[in-house]
Amino acid sequence: MNTPLDAIRRSKLARFATLAFLMPGLGLAPPGRLWANPSGGTVTSGIAEIGDGFGGHLRITQSTGKAIINWEDFSIS
Image (tube, rainbow, N blue to C red; front, side):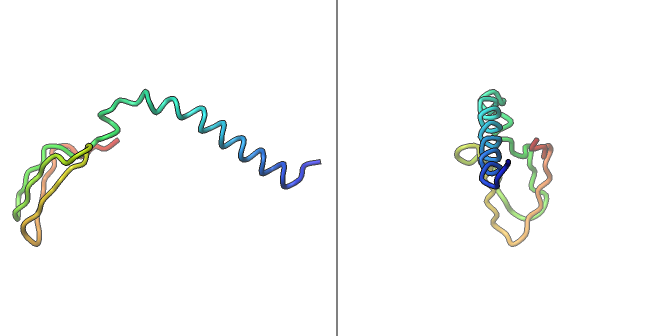
């Protein structure tokens, strides 16, 4: 007979098995996809600077209240 405790144990086991299966694959992902940012930005209105931040972050410093940036590539997947 299945009890609620058995269902919880099965649920935890299934979650652990899924994580154990997926975790090694994370190391195989290409590094560029892990830190994907928009590229080829051109400021078309306002004043802003586009630069590389630390650790794969994109840094945008905006000096006016509004700015428009046209991106050449905005694919993050």
